[in-house]
Length: 183
Image 1 (cartoon, one colour):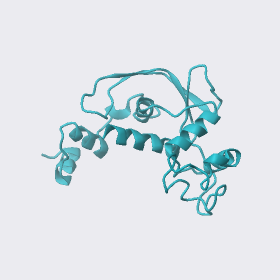
Image 2 (image 1 turned 120 degrees about the vertical axis):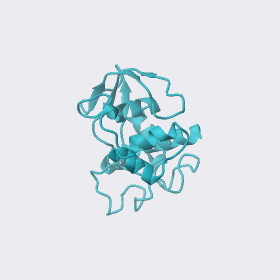
Image 3 (image 1 turned 60 degrees about the vertical axis):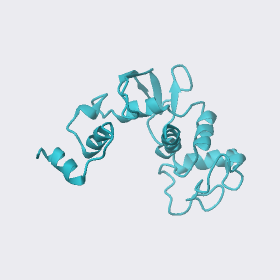
Image 4 (image 1 turned 135 degrees about the horizontal axis):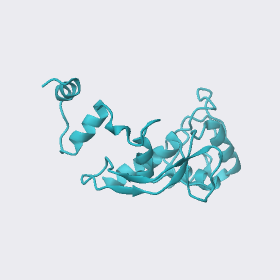
């Protein structure tokens, strides 16, 4: 189950499209510095605090336009050339051919339907790397003003995640009542 969650998170990394670089390695003006810290992850059952070191992360997602350049320059990652062990049948499923996204795809929108392996290679070619699960979650819990925005008024997702740690999912009525302050 942990492997499945990790693969899902990592395969989404390029779809959500961030790359990171450790300090002193491939920082660019399109990246922002993230001060590391300690946080309690939402995954797992023990919530043991995890240390995240300082890192840089791209501000903008990898677009269809950027990925198009990558597949033009790296033939082995084209839809018809990629080895099946590195990509499933959904790989570049919204592209009309090896080097052209479907007309429904905005060239400035984030690229989707790529594999973890392709995302990893894209990052490597940029002198960067994919974020770790902990870096990803550490950044995702922040908002513009707070490094840990989870402390704000609870949302449905926060409530559901809390219930996950109790090994049960609430009914819709329980969740709605909790969020609205009803008993």
